[in-house]
Image (cartoon, rainbow, N blue to C red; front, side):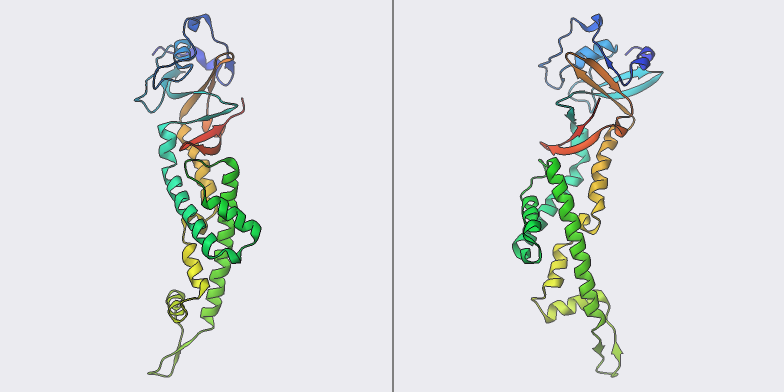
Amino acid sequence: MEKNDKFSVLLNNWVQWSKKSEHISFKISKKGIGDGEYKVATELNTIPRGQNSCYDMDIKINDVIYEVDVKKLDYGTFNTGVNGRNKIINIKNNLNDLFLCCKKIYIDYNAIFTNDENNVIKKVSKLSSDEVSTSNIQNIKFVLKLFHNKKELTQKKINDQIHNIIICNKCTGKQIEINSEDMSTILLIINKDMDDVKLLKYFTHIYIDNYQLFNDELDNIKSIFDNKLLIFVDEIKGFYIMTEPMLKVEFIRITRGNPRFKINI
């Protein structure tokens, strides 16, 4: 890899392919190498690292070596490989638990929600964590806030009941108060059909407890680009070296188990 200080003037702009790479085909059929990789590598005096690497190539700009991923845009969007898949494993696991939760609530507790709310809950219950569209992400956020608010109201209702119940100690004749956790258990034993207590058990989920966490974790997916560069390639336009991609790309959906991003350049 040669010193590429001169390429610092080419950052964040489309750069036309030069005669340097005119003998290199843009389209590549080799496994593990994407279209345009050999061509842009030739332009930047480096080589693709191949399918066994977690990134595509190294380039040197102003004496700093950067790890680079090369992407061909599809209507302004692109996906990621192994780094992206690894980043969303925890999110996918949490989503699978949420989808199961939605299915149970839709079956057993649909009467406490409106028809419109139930329609969204049903849609979310049928999702796959490998395919989550932009509209479905909005539905998930709606359901999380809906369940969070319902859990808060239900908990308050139970707490009000607990505060109104005092157990009489038969030995001393004195009245003692029972903590909320013990009282919830007592109430459930006394009345096995008490829906409020049972409902709270359905709402045991990290995203329901903190519905903002889901949005925060989606935003954090972009951290896979921290301290990296992205190079976008186009057969006609040339190549575009993007600095600070973590600040410029937008996560939009999960496709085939990979996070997909949008960029305007």
